[in-house]
Image 1 (cartoon, one colour):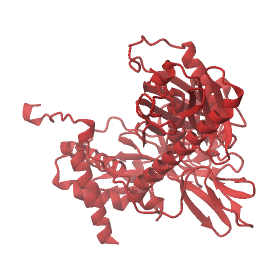
Image 2 (cartoon, each protein chain N blue to C red):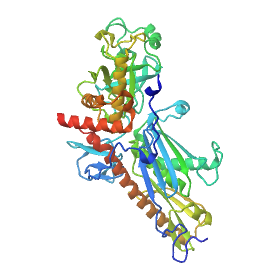
Image 3 (cartoon, each protein chain N blue to C red):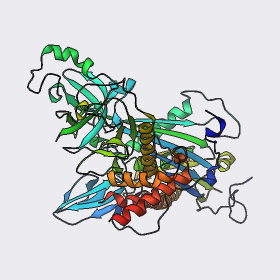
Image 4 (cartoon, rainbow over the protein chains, first blue to last red):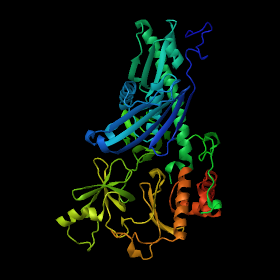
Length: 247
Length: 297
């Protein structure tokens, strides 16, 4: 199988610059301060945010007097892939993902406004079909917005790859990952165009890197527009019955 | 309990679930999301929920723009409780420290209740002695619920200090605690109500205490707690119904204050108590309550 067929289409029938369908829902877990569910194609993630709240239990020693302690936990459900995997606590992949998520989220959360508090961000991947990091980060952004936590702006991630050593492709699925294109993950702040996180699965030729990077950034901006619309719709839905809290 | 009294369990697919809020296409002008440009006008003060980037005011939360004279701020539609001086709150004792209790109010950090800010048995002018400090756990221990008033909001970090220097505040004994999102509570003249066959304390922090109306007014407040009191079935049912009505209003994201609770309670009269948990009934109660309130205004 190849990444692009003779008609210039990808294995799942998308054009090179086409995103998978993004669906999302905010306020899904009633017990949390903020929560979101996000699908990117068949990749599904659910995130719950608790806090900002008083430092709890064993985290107490990590209290920061000038900012908030951000406790981020990524985990992948045992049933999320084609073969069931027995859940292992603290496996290397999840730990790495946790650190990467933390890095991107830290760059947007205005933790300096919330001293002596803790924010818990619990991420669960329900179905893994490529772009787990993107689904996790985008859903976390939505959940943080739902929780009313001050953010500099959205932080959105997207992947990109290169087919036939020439054509950049956006939003890589699991199948495309396993066929073996190199993949680039970018997390960016869409308004200020700053980059919060970049990761490459393998080496790109320098001539191609810029092209692929630009494609990934375009993907981020497109995703941002979709998610921002969803947030606005959600706000109107929860705000209309109480006249947006106005007397 | 006989068989016909049991509530049948209703299973529903997620797709058949009744939506309690409806998506609206209506354009709302002053709605902002994080990172969105608010204004570049000169001479404005930026308040909560905003930050300055390149001389422009931008929003940092998702919510409504509010302007008071020159002050611009974004009020988040959801979030933790932000205290204001004079708010009536319900809290739970979380910790005991030197001369103070730490109270969980569902805010960002625990509030402080000083030993000197409570009415101790023996009159208002009593001196607080070292013995009182040792006795603190006997007055209020971890897990106790109290009603109190916000005495002061710290200028530096926004932390709250409380007081219970009034007989209407104090330790709560028998009743039901309902937790609702704090942004749905409307600040009104009074937060103590005696409606629908029970008494209510609507805490501004989103905690609502429903309790049987005390027979004598002096029983409320202080540290007295009567756990022997038998609450009769009628009152317990009223409490349960009020609880369900508040939950229905919350599910439909409607404001919670005395008028809306009474309206919901009146609308719920035609349903039996056990039906009040059904989503169809919840929706109907909320809609009927909204109509009633619309007719009042």
